[in-house]
Image (cartoon, rainbow, N blue to C red):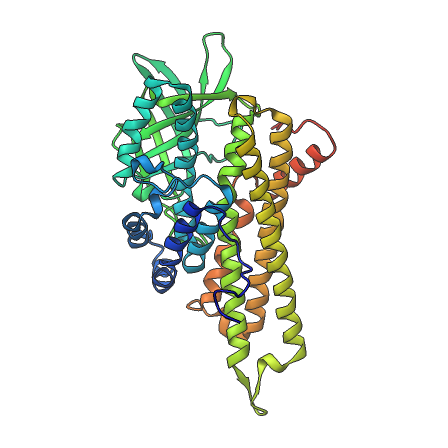
Length: 420
């Protein structure tokens, strides 16, 4: 069969912009794979990789074409591209996702303002998008120790012309290269009620300190450092209220699920790399004294068969979840988003996330088992994949325990409110 006619079983983009994005991502895989072991060994940020993604245009993918981007808007498109990057280096893939997801959300808001003829908002976005088009990077800062993301403890208090922001954030992935941080925080309204908000804080803001203390078991090149904020001034227009503190909103659910599907694609990419490594190993390694290929042993064939089943089902589940979100976002006016369908879609995303992360861990574990002692050596590719893939279940939202509770509540028709 001609290669162009051969069926493809991996995640595939659905638009021309998505295909361009995915092709660009694929061009970096071999180079990133060559560098990955060094970054992992040193625990250093993948600076060269990020610079390569900036130079090739990958990091501008979700920007509108007017500002030099590709205009990638499909959840499946974004997930397919990040999936490819992860085959070379998963740390770089999740770091890139932090920026691309943030810009994806901003681009959706920009489109709404454009359609509404909101010139003031468009002017603000114009300034930001020009900086992003020139290569500036942004990353999210939502996670805090000891609380749920619905209950951010970082506080923004009123001051002349804006806000003073104080708090502590952890797992701030991509932070060494970020020009700005999108910080989840709480504000107090004049009536005394607390609201959750997002504040955009520039890197050079006084009182902001990036503590480069990331030393993870895996994803060691992701730059997931800690961010300290002490009375950082944020201009009025750079803080946006999301909803009542501790309460779900449809906008939050959209951003936290559709906007994070690409992260799941990264863990699928890790599993695909482990699978390919195991297949190549069995097809080339022989066992003395018979000299038979390992691939000829029935018990090892069974193990590869299980990996194939897990990969096929993971791709199907993740693609379905992405398509559900793409369909919903394409046919629903953002002003008409309501909690019930958003919760149902978040439930489906959590099912996909939980399923794919679990299968990815099992695939890498099987590859490690098939490798024998060689895979247990620290310099082995499988050793790095084994550590990287373990971080999947803890990517927010949600951690494993929270995910099962949320899925169960929504399926049972109970309120999914978080009581902590």
